[in-house]
Amino acid sequence: MAMYLIGDVQGCNAALGRLLDAVAFSPSRDHVVLLGDLVNRGPDSLGVLQRAMGFGASATCLLGNHDLHLLAASHGVRKPHRNDTFQDVLDSPDRPALLDWLRQQPLAQLLHNAGEVLLLVHAGVLPQWTAARTVELAGEVETVLRSAEWPAFLQQMYGNEPAQWSDSLTGMERLRCITNALTRLRFCTATGAMEFAATANAAAAPAGYMPWFEVPGRQTANCTVAFGHWSTLGSLQRSDVLALDSGCVWGGCLTALRLGTVATAGHQRVEVQCPQEQRP
Image (cartoon, rainbow, N blue to C red; front, side):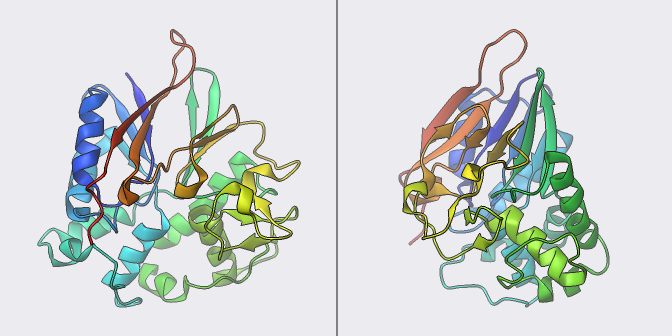
């Protein structure tokens, strides 16, 4: 069995199909993890969700900020933005099943592969959190999204505060802070205070901030964190960090990483070009 991680698809279903063909992915034999932002900005969000849902247990799909935005728009919490491209999902007769499936997906997952521990998230991890704690906190949000209370959660999900994690946080402040870290984080301070305005590359950190994975002493430095979300970051593949958003929807590539096995050394990166994917 081969295990693949794929960065932000964002509605680029044709590119996803080409990438899966390039690695000869077989749902009966292999497993794929999509690292969030399955939908939006690309031309076929509906096709991506139908494909991913159709893979059943052969696919794990993390929730990203665009996926949560789709769920919020489906309940009228947020009006679709003029650049949103998920109306095909909202108009589909499959809408109830697809949205119900989407809200069941995780925000973080631990993966053990050939002796390596990988933490999978969409965006980032606060420096105070261990890998196990990250999955535990993600589970608090997942529980609400999978319950009858999920529309009420979406109503209060948006906002940048609290920007600093504390174990004493409760209620929606706690859930919002967890959600923002896992689905929106790029830069934070050495103490984990989050910044959400900057979207440039790692070298352009705002004053007083740094990429979340460069914080000295972060508690996830002892494992490998794989994430997407940050298309301007560029290719980053090192022992503790795997960045896989290569800007498919912006005319870049869609990237898959085939994880190494006991018999093969290292991970194999496979990319397909996506120059025509973005919808005007």
